[in-house]
Length: 373
Image (tube, rainbow, N blue to C red; front, side):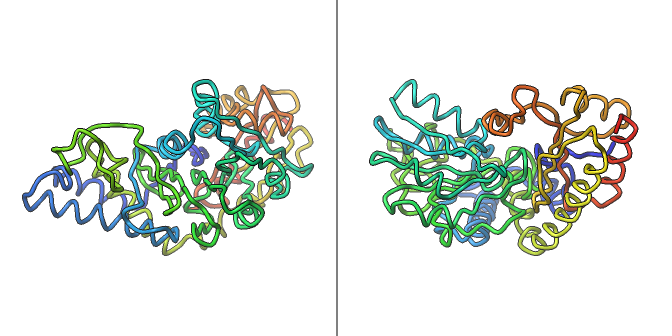
């Protein structure tokens, strides 16, 4: 199989990540929940991962790195744990349902309102359009680090610069983290949600929320933390306040090793993804039946349509006839497709890995030609 669905889950895991996960399963204990040597040793490694993520994303210290099962869970922690009745939020048309659905829930249950900043004519996020929607009661602005449909990477520092100081700035790092440089401090990001299993090379079940000292999220889940067991309430300090239940140590180990890989070769990987998406963009221009909805980008995302074949049918043809894995449909981002004019059919999305090469691009182009140019 030629796997081109890396924006959903990275299909290739570096050897160091695979080895770390296997090793973690040979040392089976609960990190920090007991006083014996193995539990304490695992807790030290969990702490090392918190420190590494804080360093990699220019965060606010290990105590403000909370492990989650996914980027979705991290976004829910930030959104549901922060917003209150009467608050207003600004999002962009690129936002994933991991942002929109929690906001819809708060809209129905707590009266939280939100507005959607439109895309510009060339399909980009305008910092001015986002800032224009800020109101007196705007509590937060939430912007993706990279669109999971087009690969567009909004200018986070430019957006933050136009926002009032009082407004919190949330970033969905699902697609951008690991591919583009993200500095929480330089970009003024108060909450950064991460999906470890995509650009950070970790396994599924590895997510994290990094947040600034301006943010004090309330717990969304309640349970054991291993600390203050005498207290019927969740601990008042982080990360324990948001981490109830057992941490997935194999997931943390994979995230630690994946972050080390990103630290050493992110720029190299981004260069390869730019090259591959540029090549596919150029090839599609010579195939009149296809239309590209992406520009060359460092996240490896390339969405396109066929003038006659619906996106999910085309994705099925690529899978069944050519053994090429892509994704059709709306990609959990219906607002983006409405803005692009591709709703409700959606687009075919091919998403590349920095460990792939022009071989995969050429295979996809060859298949598209055979399907019908």
